[in-house]
Length: 311
Image (cartoon, rainbow, N blue to C red):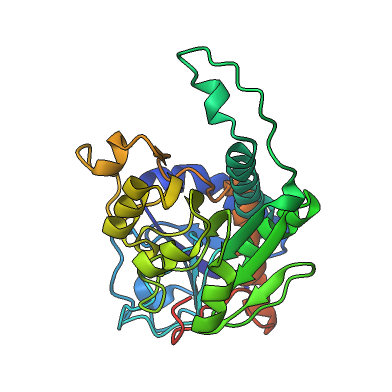
């Protein structure tokens, strides 16, 4: 039996994904009609990017699932016409590995104090070795697939790793916390804080002025998660006062970050243009194909979104 798969994303994404998806579906044993243009009433699965022109899911009465190409679902989860099961992208081969590498690199950058040697216009001879990883506390807010993988890597490097999640997840050799009291405990005295929470009403401005006051003075904020996790005014104030020594930010409330935004010119801010990690077409195509195979076999879908929680 042939299943009809609608690819609903921008043209550039189709050009990148068409061949990998066809190959992945074939390898999964799924006979599929894959197209960017199918009658709504014939569609069995929608492969979807939230920046697609498709915003009304009501006509897709036969669709068994919407399979998101992105890890983030905040741009789709609240759509009232979306009644089909929604799966987010969890790509451990590509997306997760890329995030682990980016987070580990920037944690080590700040831990080792590399900036002082990379940018040293006065040629200062700074004979001061950094402490060992075991003497640093790194707190990760968000212990989903990405946060847990980053935590595990940092543990292997010897850091004291704390983790906080709303659901109270556990990661081996990580001091895990939950709830408001747990958040304060996780942040208290942290040298480096990594933000990998989803964007939901409950996580907006989680890094408030109060939260920023809890970390070790001169500590570092690293945000490859979502822009709204940070109260921007509070962070700028904490940077100016020295409470936060540096912020490395990959995501923002408005993207691209406006050229006149204070982050660009601030000497204690590093801006990276939402490149911490991305979905890799080959591995993501295999994730999509596996979910379609599962749907046709009557097996549970992977990575289903909890609509109430928002992720």
